[in-house]
Image (cartoon, rainbow, N blue to C red; front, side, top):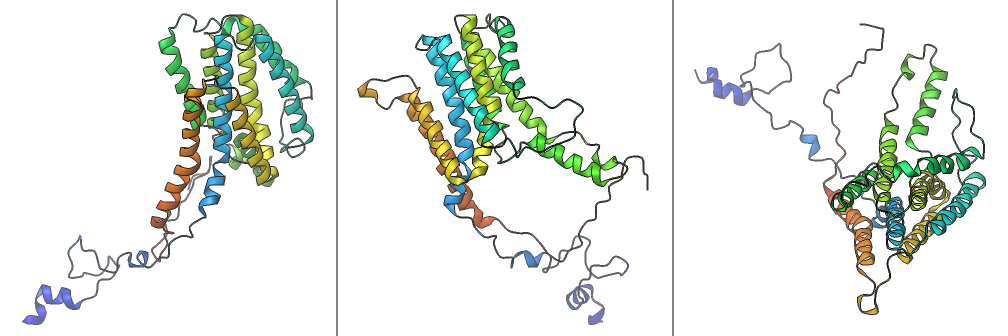
Length: 333
């Protein structure tokens, strides 16, 4: 009988998404209407290329800070800068930056979280780091003094790359402060407090970034001639990699024009401290390399993201969404 043939039955029958009914289709059958709604989904709105370029300003600021640190280190290594010059300059700039942060950007906007430790006074963050560095400088200068320079340069470069890779480029409070504020808010909302018992995962990358930068400064300090040079270099590293990002976030939060002014001034300061070059080699190899990296970050990267946005889709359909059931601690289903 022709109607009883399996091929004819499969042609006339309509596949249904059910398991309790026997259907004349193989087990690996995929209907033509499977995820057909994905073909008609409109592409996501493409952002403007200029906005993507402006979003890379925090990365440029961080690159300029690293270039500034390396320029000062090279000047101290060849004898162009003395330890007293760098030390007093760092002290003056850090006092000015602390005043700007305290009374201008970020001082009154800091998130208040619950803590068992006493509130830090105004003088504690200014006095403790120099005192500790003055005591530890003789030790820090000899940690890697036995290592050859052929191993010091790639090690310091790798640590600075890790620092840049894990840095927090967001605007506003850092990841740890935001995470602590969320936990404090959950504790106030929850009576048991079980949902707030989480480890501070978002702050791990920021801590590793700062640790990598300070480790790179310690590694490079072993090439300097005296303990005073070691103290000045690590004081500069502490100001650039620990204190300056906090001030930069407050400046970026104040507006786009402040962020652009900060980026231009930081890049100009870093380039002005690069080693001098002859008129035949102007603008110099370090300046060309630095501008090439900035071009990759500010132009090539945003353009690639803008060009590849055409393949970005907002996935959605009428398929069954998976409901994730989380089991709280101490409660079993």
